[in-house]
Image (cartoon, rainbow, N blue to C red; front, side):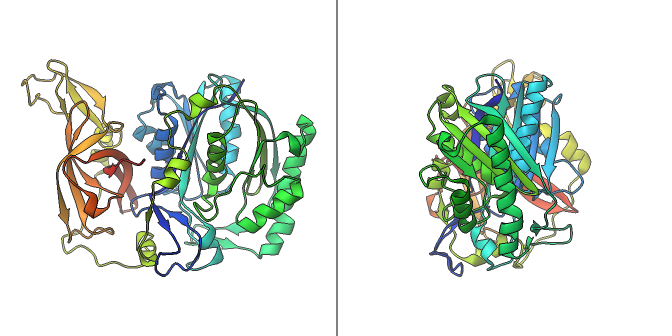
Length: 468
């Protein structure tokens, strides 16, 4: 049996709501912070997915996105390094179509069925840009999802699937475009979205002899609430069968959207439930999934969708969103420009910067970050073993606030933290409320973007208050 062994999700902390000045929409949508992108959110979702699972058991990683930071340079390898996966695994970016998330499910399952891998991680994330104040911007959101596909401890069996591939220019973004472009709504619905989804669903029904009544939940991609409701009627699904598409609380998160809806459906699923999963983009993917008695194991200890949606903060003004996306110029720091990233140093220090390894003295057990040649406690030389600190919780020892550092989220907060189990580090803090920061505050680490210089995206770990 091949299927989903574990699930994970990530929703950014911030929301544009009806109280956000200048937003002008009654609904909410999730907004990635200025230091988040598709890579960091896919990484966060993968961390949620792999809780309690040996990361060295992962044999392959697929990264699905339409907002890849690079056109030439793989991002799956960056995520794999941040997750501290083995080096002898296969990795691939799946891009250029909204269907990349559900298509990645097929690729991962095929690898497991063929025996070339036992556990394949599928991570998806998107930060898509629509024209400011457009209808599309209102319905978009930012987020990530991850699935671990395996033939062991399967919580959701992939019973059958059917795929439709079609050349259709409905939404697109070329290499020179900042914003998503779109054709006329009725043309897209009547000639693209609805026929493709119905054909995929019909093909699946012919293979399985299943009818709409056989599914406890239907997880269906749609660009907006109107199309979601229309396709549900066309497929003969009742309102009780429809998984909430979360327009008005999350938004359409692109390649991650159907996987995030699936994660939400699995939070309440019971063994024996069947789920219909449909992704769309240049055709459509349809899956018949069946929940097994391992489902509780797959969701235990994970935040998934409900906890992420509950742990949120309001964005005060639409102006913040524009500034975070680089659409509104901000005064630069009154300091010398940052220096370009040293490619040699970035490669040499990947273990401590991306994997976030400290060193543990093999003589006295003292933990240091970064690893040192001599133990600061017992003075032993060259006697340390690597220890991953990125998944440790920590507490603030002291902190400072810099109001002239030129950050897009003033002030820049610098924390000195002690990790549970040992180790001390100096790190920037993100997703924080200034009036809540205090010594002793419990924190966790989050993989974030420091900046882009010379086209090089520089990632590192920051501290953040623990999400509920």
